[in-house]
Amino acid sequence: MNNQGLKIAFFDAKPYDIEVFNELNSGYGFDIKYFKFHLTYDNIVLTNAYDVVVLFVNDTVDSHMINKLSKYGVKLIALRSAGFNNIDLKAAQDKIRVVRVPEYSPYSIAEHTVALMLTLNRKIHRAYYRTRDSNFALSGLLGFDMHGKTAGVIGTGRIGKTLVRILKGFGVKILAYDKFPDNDFADETGCEYVRIDDLYRKSDIISLNCPLTEETEYIINADSISRMKPGVMLINTGRGKLIKTSDLIDGLKNGIIGSAGLDVYEEESRFFFEDLSDRVLADDVLARLLSFNNVIITSHQGFFTREALHNIAKTTLENIDDFFSGKK
Image (cartoon, rainbow, N blue to C red; front, top):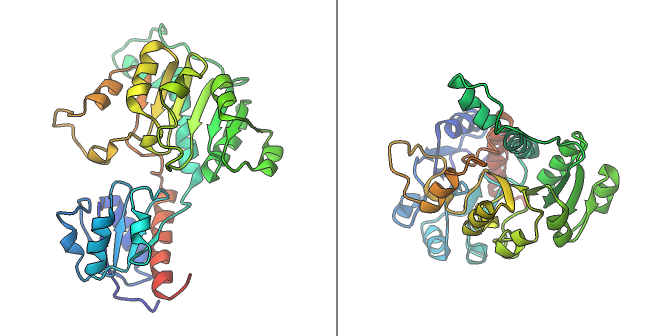
């Protein structure tokens, strides 16, 4: 590699990040400084004289921070994630190039989505705690056959398509919604692209696998919930702001939402990826969600497989090397 010694400021670094990036960086020779905390306006001065900042999903960079990074000589923001809604791309244009990891493992997210579905359906989370207390009663654990049910998949990118293929193995009928339907994929898998209202009305299970954009922000709200089949299972492994959480809680209380599996939360940046077990949870909305026995929340761990971590590190380092080698 001809870019040895490039200075990289790596934020929100966890032990597993450091391990895999150090292993793969042996082939590049970059000078990586790891910071355990998020990049904020208060600590952005730490990026002075660095060539690259490497960020994750909860590092938010607005126009003021873009200007600061540019002033400090940062030439590249390398996101080690697929989502990029946390970066002001308009402000970055002509100042700093932004790269991301568009695909690390669609299997990791899709399989976690199915894990949430099965856990909610068969009440595995409740059974686990019961049997540890020597309670082997079945009351309250009744589920349903996945076979023959209808699942609505909103967003058929790489993850959504992988999910469709997995669900077909259960004998589930698939309805799909995407701004850009892939009719060849529909013919191949037997799924059916429909209007989103039809998806809401007919689906027993709805999974959100679309990116967060201005069009999809709060796509699940009081109005859309009112059009869903009563008792629907809702799964979100996309982005937290796809769902208006207060409306989700109302839907759970009135029974339209029969269960919910959330790997993301709209205010997750204050909580997810951290151990807060020794504190009082200050977010009343999140605390309310955690009180429902038909809601499972995981802390944005859908991506968290060995394969995905390796691919994230590999692509991020390749992105950096390509940029400073003058490649498009």
